[in-house]
Length: 207
Image (cartoon, rainbow, N blue to C red; front, top):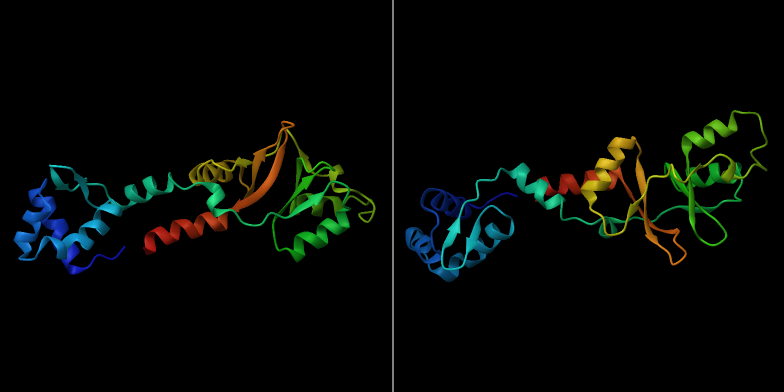
């Protein structure tokens, strides 16, 4: 976030004199308290300054990367969900190959006839299946998919930072976002990818 000249002056005053009231900041800049109110709101909402009732404004001394880290911890995956590509377990490997390229994704999420999330089929899985010499026009994806308990997924209300750590740890490009069903199984509600998380991270630096 690029600060205006006046906002930079406010930060320096608070650094050198904090805690300090809004009235005293206004006096030093020869401005009214009402004039400064929008700037003080921006600085406190962004975490650059903090304020306490009857005490005033003070500088928390946190570098920008610390502020970004704290902001990332607040983000929930369901708010950054994209459309998942879900296929039935009886879909053939050939049709799955067509789907994964037409949808331009790295992973297909597989469900059974009840809509339960039961597997993941990646580009590598499909490539491997096409090279083993069997008929991919009749082979179902449930033969080659990864199944429970080896599936990686994330619940709707979990944090984006946890999804990022899981993708790094497992060396995968995306995760299904799931919710628990009454039968104890999971339903696929969305997906979150490394690309989405990268966009979030870059947007924080560009604010």
